[in-house]
Length: 404
Image 1 (cartoon, one colour):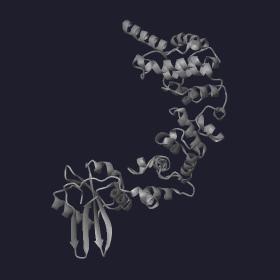
Image 2 (tube, helix red, strand yellow):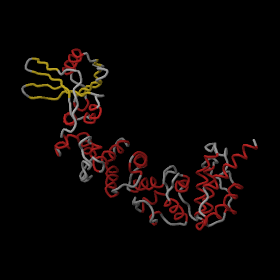
Image 3 (cartoon, rainbow, N blue to C red):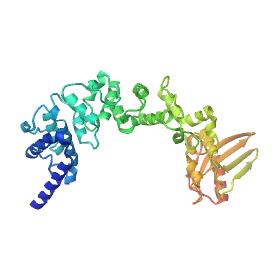
Image 4 (spheres, rainbow, N blue to C red):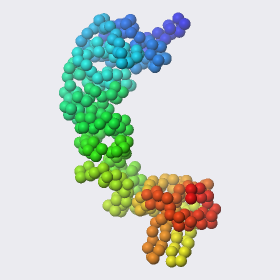
């Protein structure tokens, strides 16, 4: 047992040497380490359930190295440190380090998330600078080195109340949303699940989006994330990525604005954007890719004055037009169709000379199975359309695996 403890201590000693700061900060660092070892379990394995192996101490050793680099900001010496206990948290290496930082740096209270950020891998220097800035009694709005997330005086008050698990940048966004009048559920959702957890390329625009969401109050908070993703795709992402092949490198709607929009109008636009974009930019439906037909035959069925047709869509333009007209995502199946992993068919009706799309059908070419058959907006096909589809499936030897 003693041999094992000696091995672990030797391993920790090697890590301490490996992570020691540059020469001008080493004296402070090596004066700090004996005090830490004598008065706490920060460098011990087994004290904290999360620290089961010596290598798990690496984040704490790295944090101690950073602390040594900020020797000139210490307001007290390690020799006078008496580890503080935090009743709200169980005893752990993390709690002990927090006590040490309060002793060395804090004339004024600093949010826990800002102190714990010193334990994050690859922590940016501005995070350490902001911590010592606030520890000296200055506000976050006076700090010039922070990311470009603007904080109002109200937001600055929320910043110091941000949840302890957030990274500093996330805390800034959380505080900004709260400062604008957003509730905790919305702030948590946007910080947890959207690109807004980081500074954006156009902060002024995203402020209008945040204010829009606060004003419109989506009934279901996760919908806010979907709205943010949609806006980002339309305004900032390459059309090739959003629309599909042939979209080009520029965004679909670079002039997209929240001005004059309501939640209902934006949701309607989310449902119909492909159809609306085709009306504005017909070139998006230009044929760029073509593939060969599978070994399944089309069908024409005459029923009095009514003609039913089922035929395969064999290029990306046909898929785009089908998706726009039927209000679903079949345009995204280009790659699967080009690789012949999927085959898309259109069921249409001609009555009194007027053609009408009724159902979009997906066939698995290898298994000869109809895996999807959807009417407009992914609704179920009508009974008449189902009957025609059943006739075609029987004739071509396709398994019709849909509920009827």
